[in-house]
Every structure is written in C-alpha cells, then in structure tokens.
Image 1 (cartoon, one colour):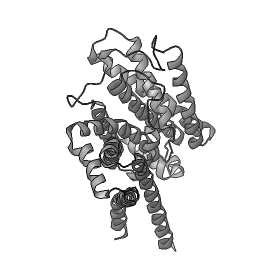
Image 2 (cartoon, rainbow, N blue to C red):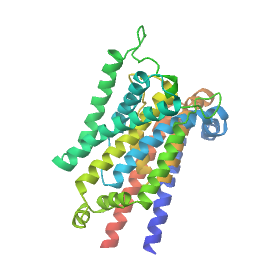
Image 3 (cartoon, helix red, strand yellow):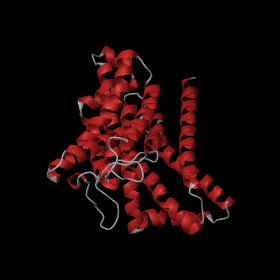
Image 4 (cartoon, one colour):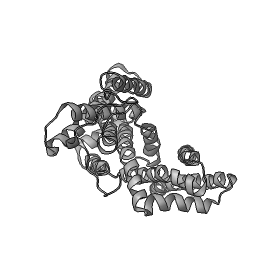
Length: 346
C-alpha cells in the first residue's frame, strides 16, 4: 500500500508543481492588469494549437529535451551534471567544425558525421568531470559548473578570431555546409529534425535503462555505489561512462541548434538551455517520458511568451517566473516526501 501511494505521489508531484506555478503565475499576471485566463489562452493556443507557433515550440523543445536527457542520465548514476550549458556549446562547436571543414560529402554521410562530432565534443566535456570524480574524488557539481565558463569563453574566442566570418558585423562563424543541415519537418516553419533526434535518443535511453546490463549497472551505482562495488561492478568506470554519455546528449542539443536552426556558430547561441535542463530532469522525477512532456511544456512556455506579451500585454519575465516557480514547487515536493519518509522510519 505504501509502495503504491509512493508511485502515485511520484506521478502527481510534477503535475501539482506545474499547476501551482501556473496558479501563482496567474496572480502575477492579474497584478499586471491582465486577465490570466486570456493570457494563458493566448500562451498555449499560440504555442500548441497554432501551426507556426507549434513549429516554434518544437524548435525550442529539441535542445531542452536532449539537454534534459543528459542531466537525467547522470542523475541515474547519482551524479549531478550542472555542466549542460558548456556541453551544449562544445557540441555546437564540434558540429560546426565538421560542417565547415568536411566539404563535398553527401548529406546521408555528412549529417550523421556532424551529429557525431557534436556528441563526441560534448562527451569529452562531460567525461572530464566524470574522470575527476571517479579517479580523483573531485565533486562533479564544481567541475561541471566551472567547465561551463571555459566552454562559453572558448567558443567566444573562436568565433571572434579563427572561426569568424570575414566581414561579419558581429561574432559568428561562416555557414556550415548545407549537407550538414538538419531538415525542416514542418514546411514554412523553423521546426527541424532535431526534435526527432531527441525522441530517438529518449527511446534508446529507455531501452538502455530498462533492458540492458549497462542500464542496470548505472542504476545500481546510483542507488548504492558501495553495494554495486561489492557485487563486482566498477563504480569508477560507470561514473566516467555515464558522465560522458550525459555530456554527449547535451552536446547533441548544441548540434541541433547549429545544424537545425542557426546553421553557423554564434558567440552566445544558447539562451540557458543547459540550466533549464536541470529543472526538467528533477521535474520529471527520473522518468524519460516525463522529460519529453516537461520539455514540451517548457518549449511551449518559451514559444508563447513573446506572443503573450504582444497580444495580452504580459511581460515575458512572467514566463521565466513560472519556470522558476515550477522548480521551487518540485523542490518543496521533495522536502515533503523526505519528511514523510522520516516519519515512517520513526
């Protein structure tokens, strides 16, 4: 009975968190002098029911989904990957280099190679803190966070100097080869195949965690590393593998932005997707289907924010407040859950 109630709570807590955030957001909208029902109707109608708005939602969902899967993968092994933003930038860099310097290839070969380049660059950037944690005992929260700044500044230097487009008015690289572009999936919109890459990655991860020895090993290390070591598992190797995999997935988020949307590398091409991914992973409560759903929700919020501002005169900052409130309420649900566990033990 207790197990069943815990499962119900796991399913309901993200819904309650989102509903609570939207309720508080409604209060903020009302204080700004706008009818919350009107504002939310505009927000979700334009981002989900409108053809062009839905295309924009899918465009913003793709990097959120891939980066969220990266954070979730690390969490499965008990690791906190705060470096999604840096891994996104490194993934974008990897795909840009493949797109720029491997010319004359057919799209059937060039596109997968560019995705692979993004994955590998992100994997290296995630594997570094994995190695430092497994071998040197350095806290991965610190290393992943600090590596964000290194990646952002590295990309900033490259697009200002060696990779800058000749005569460019601002810092960005030349266009990557068209054979490395992700195809558009909704005509006359910006919605590209990056969302399909994210969904395929989600399915593969579900199979890995549910059906493979590696998935079992990752979850065992996450639940109890001491017991996993006694059972013969290499905890250190698992941590390195899982952090590299997490970095690679976040790297693909950067690839989707470069290959599907911008087609060149910009100095600051991510609006904080790596940090949003942390919220998505915790909001999903470790569930891959939950990551897909919450990524779509956050994508819809980002997509409909500007329309809501134009049509209902509601500041865009209200949307970001709703995102933050969602994280706050899911954190409160964690605290409540832990409190009930303590009471049961007593």
